[in-house]
Image 1 (tube, one colour):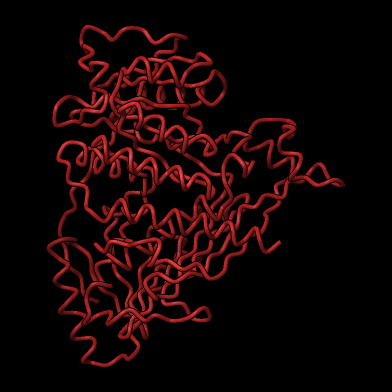
Image 2 (cartoon, helix red, strand yellow):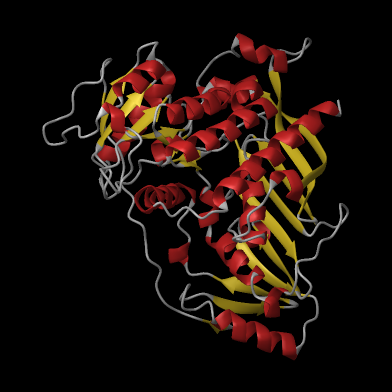
Length: 478
């Protein structure tokens, strides 16, 4: 067993508060409003970041504010239709503000009139819009916000169909012309096993060259299983009923799949600018349903009946089970490399498990495998599986692996039969909720320093082309 030791820099996470009133009051004297109406698009290099939360319907909107951030004003302006979604959001912020350890101090200033979107545009109380909610509305929200001079940090997915993909391309053009920053929340880039898989794939002595593969044996595979019943911030998650309507939430093939397609690009093609028109070819896609019973629906939504807009998923003969297109698989080529990504949803997880992710990358010297099954105690585990186990490879592996010590002190290798497991100290295992602060900090850096890598925008476009094109193909097969 080889171990290499040191420390990781932690991000401090702190979160939000609520002041619930129908019309947003004027800012406190302690936090004067320095944002002129003509300056909503100005960035943190010129003024404090002032957040606006628009129509929060997903718990990810609150997770962005689970931490406080330097240079971000504690006043947050919320514009939303009145209803349970905004009440749930404010309750989560209140819980962060009143928690015993590291309480946040957000001051939520809330407007819930029916004209909430236009009111946000007219008020220009902030300069950066955070979006995490109904995905049917999200792309329009993104475009309207940018056209009105706001930066945008959007939860995935930014689009759920081909029409929205066209609007997204327009949104990126608008952002560029106005020097605004549009970015999506890709939390999985901050999972330590994916980070190390990326590092190892860049070491030819360890990984070799990427195998292109074919549909039967892809060069890269990635899969994820998600659960409708789960805990967030220590409480059972209550989901809005609309999240089970694929016309509002999006199918699994365009929703969670966004993370998988992003990881394939980020891990397998690091720093490379991808052109969706020439580098992506979707060969085949399929989708299928998961059943959700009325009893299960009641548990995760708190509602006693299916809303009328969901009954089309129950079929004509059975109104007690929803059949939801939550699952999908895409076979595509990315710069000639055969890729397969698969997303499935279940109601809940086996004991000790939660959402899970697995990945296999095939190089000419080794496979890099992320596993998260029962044998791994449902913890993400990274393995190096050499194609030829001999002393020469072991010597190369140990030598090259040592070079990662300065970046990831404390990691190590443990030989297990014909492969090595990567030992990762617990302090690197931050968890999904903590990753939202990582993404937000990265985004705030883009606002302040104008240093977003040149590949980020074309690769976001390539990612959403892949998912929306796959959805079209899957639906056309029926």
